[in-house]
Picture 1 (cartoon, rainbow, N blue to C red):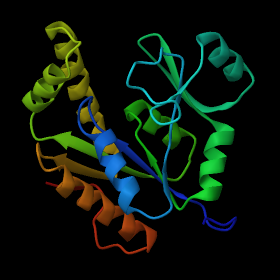
Picture 2 (picture 1 turned 60 degrees about the vertical axis):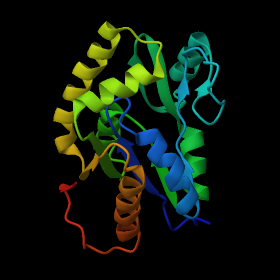
Picture 3 (picture 1 turned 120 degrees about the vertical axis):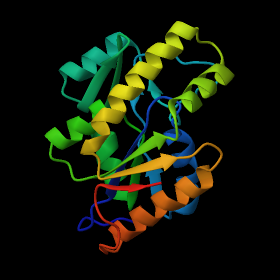
Length: 204
């Protein structure tokens, strides 16, 4: 259990859409003691497979804007005309009750934490190639080729901004366990204060 004198380690894990950040975090939660996932609040509609409090906290656009005006959000983004944000009280509760907070957020969210000067460890998951992301999107279904290509273009932009992250890992297709092991090693090194892994490293 965390104490008042020990702040939880915030670990930001980003990737292009379909890059594996959510899958990696699900596995990390099982192997890292006293860890929790940072769940965002959103105004987008809940999808059939979404889990309230697991994937997002779902509220209406009107309620989001009300809470925003009240200053209840630590940071927020607007994507596809939908709000996504992190509630201050919820974030404080995670900090007080966990040793590790795993945050699946995008490059804009990461920049907000930089701007707010909130200490964190940042890891960006790179695809072994962009065709991998295309195929994953096609397998999931529900997207046109135009939508997929728009997502790929955005992915290239996010990868360009990954230079601002502490670590970049190549998440090879079919080797998620290896990726998770590498992330866990980085986190454990940071927790014990060792410097055995160079910052800005590319672990492929």
